[in-house]
Image (tube, rainbow, N blue to C red):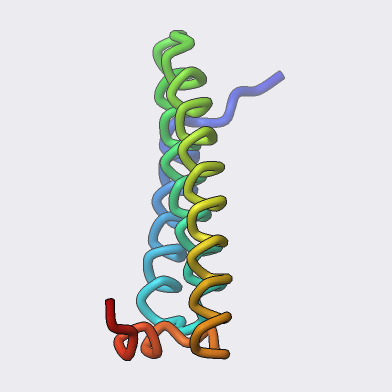
Length: 102
């Protein structure tokens, strides 16, 4: 079984991270922005996995578990905020959040 080169894995992780970042900056829908942040977190996790496999250490996998835990917490809080925003403003546009007072 051939191993995937480290460079290829890191290029894939960087590409996924850049796609997520560009999508966060371009999109106005909050749900798509949340999905883009998830793509960025998974790209960072992939980079940890590739680096851990390069040195033969399980540290990359442990960090990926922490990233998954953080992503799950981020999704739960993010979806709660999205529901509140939609309940108050009847829209999921990210620019509409500027109208909120609090």
